[in-house]
Amino acid sequence: MSLYLDIAQRNAVLNTMAQLINTERNTILEVNKRDLEAYNGDDLAMYDRLKVDDAKIDGMILSLQQLAGQEDPLGLERFNFTHENGMQVSNKTAPFGTVLIIYESRPDVTIEAAAIAFKSGNKILLKGGKESLQSNLVLVNFWHKSLEQHSISKDWVTYLEFNREQTQAFLEKPTQKLDLIVPRGGEKLIAFTKKHATCPVIVSGRGNNFLYIHPKADLKKAMSIILNAKTTKISACNALDKVLVDRELPNKEAFIKDLIAELKAKKVEILVDNSLAKTEGTSEITGEESWFEEFLDYKILIGEVGSTEEAIEKINTYGGGHSAVIVTEEEQEADLFMNSVDSAAVYHNVSTRFTDGGQFGLGGELAISTDKLHQRGPIGLQHLVTNKWYVKGDGQIR
Image 1 (tube, rainbow, N blue to C red):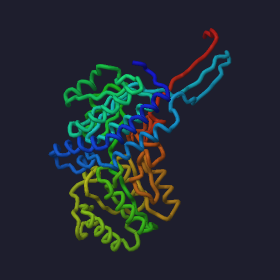
Image 2: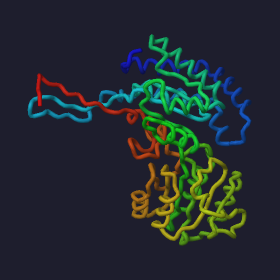
Image 3: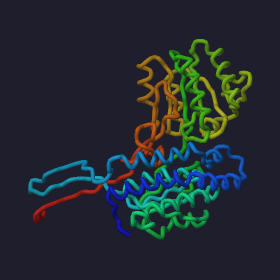
Image 4: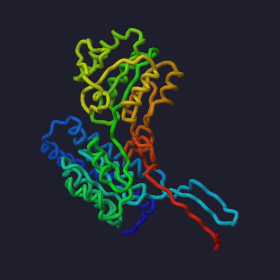
């Protein structure tokens, strides 16, 4: 197998994939229906991620088309230097090599995340969850058909049909070269991967996102943002989990009452801290564990803080390092919040649901990293590269 595919080959495979997925739309839906019927769990987020519909298929196609239209992320010169002895030194972007993506219940990862890694010149290993096996195998078969159509080895995309014990053994002692691992799923999957992996791991997927309502907030904006961030997709890592209301918020009691009514209408369970313990229609939390929890459910926790600084401290203590919002009309307070909160994405008067590679103009994402090395937040095409030093001379010695 060739270790390098030029940009024309990579783009041709992506365009063929887009055509195949559109042509085989009904096949994908039928196979996914079997996965859904076989799923016997009660995890709403898992079921939502497992389900493939026409909108998700449209998203897969769009992602492939956008990636095929983007510039080559490889061979970009980052640094150039002429040594005093005449040799030319440059640094250019290069592929990682082999990227393993371990994921739960999301067949679209088999297309979108793999396509980003492929466009970046990497060989792909996919290890999906058992609940989405049939959907994943069909989609991997499309990868293989697309590769073969362009006379490229099927080994560029490989599906690992491993159980938990086999996966652990592979992580600890890989049977082939492995350069980077990206776990896409819940905290248990991430912890399992980090514990057993012997190569770099990009931590992705944990949310626990906070929103702070400052006294100078536009309450109409606050209401709209909270409802959008909490209820439009509970299975997303960019969904909202916690709301911090400033004690000095004008009309605070009336706003909280209206907010609870709106959330209840959308079947959201309301938890509160002791400052709001007597609020009708809510349940008081008994300890601080709930502040750490990512709900991935129709559930939200509302509490009070005394200032922007207290909100920042609370978010930096309990938040997942993913996304955080301040709702305020005061720019200075927004700047303080955005510069001080330790999250990959910080927002002023905007829903957390925009933390997404496509929404940020990256043409999709491999993952949303809450690590600070080597890339934070949505990891797009241009981030899934490492670098290489190129030194040219004429017999120079040191």
